[in-house]
Length: 209
Image (cartoon, rainbow, N blue to C red):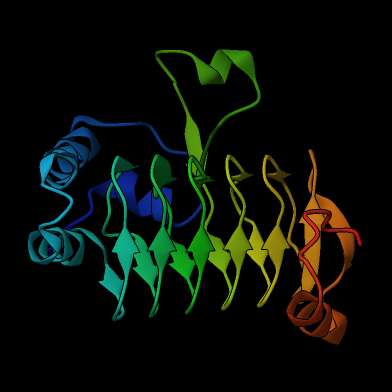
């Protein structure tokens, strides 16, 4: 996407400070929604056009990526992804702050990466204040995020980690673990047994085997 000239509210947003959704921010989001609609309306077989829109939309993205539709995001320009990204259908990236995604990441259907949140105090949460905040999300290399999982503001996920389907990730996850649940917690380490046993015997769906 073309470089965005952020208004003061946008600068506060990207700095992780409380901000209000101003007309200027809404206009930037409207431009993004038009691009997203164009992407979602394209014939799935027209891979060239789909790639062109994503490259315009995202801040940066590497090679050999595939993003299925429908896909939704707030700004697009705050999403940075590496090589070999695979995003399945129905995913939503609320990129009010930066979303950094490493190489070789698999994101299953209906996953939400949500940098945005609302103020806890009920008076500040409603108009005229209507304060919001946004914190960055960082996804490492070789991460697999299971279907219908949600990653919340400020979370970092380490390299090679698997997030089980339906998880709600509220805190950082280390590298090389299988993590599941709401709130998401570490179930076990990823180890050499995962490679050898998968190749040598019928696969078990139980991640805690």
